[in-house]
Image (cartoon, rainbow, N blue to C red):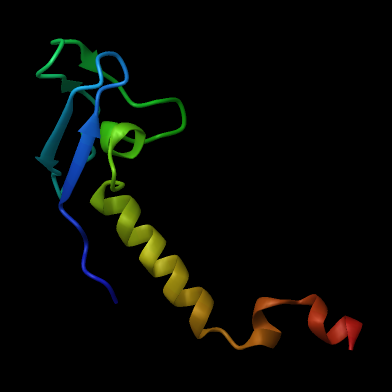
Length: 89
């Protein structure tokens, strides 16, 4: 299993300011004040936090979910992943 990345570079969609921040590991960060223009950023609809919306790396909970999904997908035998395999063959 790959390590969770804790740093992400946020880019403000309003002024373009770029800043590398350390992400919290125990919660999603809903708000972030841009150091460039002082506007408060909120997540885009469907995203859980500002790092998932404006960062180079998704937040740790999303990274962990993706890693668990990929691991479970690659562990399953092909016939278990595709229920239609046996029907076609």
